[in-house]
Length: 314
Image 1 (cartoon, rainbow, N blue to C red):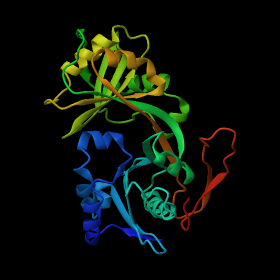
Image 2: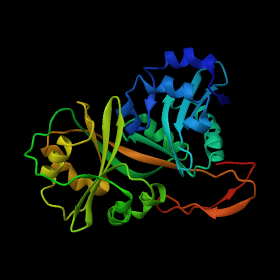
Image 3: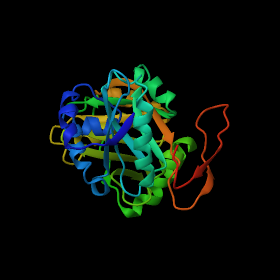
C-alpha cells in the first residue's frame, strides 16, 4: 500500500465515509460533533504546522483497491498525538491499515511526538485491530453524559478559574491521584491551567479540566478522596460551568477515580460504555542517532531500547 497526505482529490471519499468513521478521540468527538470535524479538520491538514491536524489516505493493493483514511491531531510541543478517526470502520482488518498508520507515525514523529493515543471500547473490533499494530492499554475510562441540570442539591463551593498560582497545588494533587504509568503518557500540567479549582486552607482538593466545543463540554475531574459532599459539589459545578449555554456536559472518569462514578450518577448523568485508552510508542526522528529506553506498557514482557534515527521510525 502507498499512503500519502490527504488532498482535495480525496474529498469525495471522505464525504462517502462520513458515516463510516471510527472515532478514536472521545473528547474531540463529543465537543465538536461527529459530522463536523472530519472534513473541516481534513482541510486544515494543508496547514499542519499551524493546525496540528494530519490526514492521510492509502489504497489497498490487490483486487479491492479499497481506500483507507486516517487522521490524527498533534499540538506543537506536545509529547503525544491523538488518532481522530480511521475510515471506513469495516476495514480495520485490512492488511493496509498497518501501512497507513506507519506513514502517519513517521509524520507525527517528525513533529516531535513520543506517543500516539486512541480511545476505543474494548468490545469494538477496533480494540484488537489496534492491539495488533502495537497499541497498548495505559488507562481505562467511562464517559458520563448530563444533558440538563444536575438532579441533586448543590452545595456552594468556591470553584475558581485555575491560575498560575495554582499550578503547584494542581500538580501535587495530580501526582497523588494519577498512577505513574499514566503520567508517563500524560504528565501533570506545567504551564497554563484550563479549568476550575476548589481549595480548602490553600490546599487544592479538586481540579476540573474543561474542554469546550459547539456540541458539548468535556469535564475531566481530579478530586482528592478526602473531599466531602462530592455529589453536592459537582451539582454546584454543573450550575456554574462558565459559558455552558445549554450544552451537554460529559464527565470523563478514569478507572483510578472510579469512586466518583456514584456521585456523578447521583447528579443525573448517564453512563456510557467503558473504554480502553491506548498508546503506541514512537521512535522519534532526529538528526543524530542515539538510544533511549522506552518504558514497556505490557506485563511480563521486556522492552528493548528504541533507536532514534533520521532514517527509521517504529
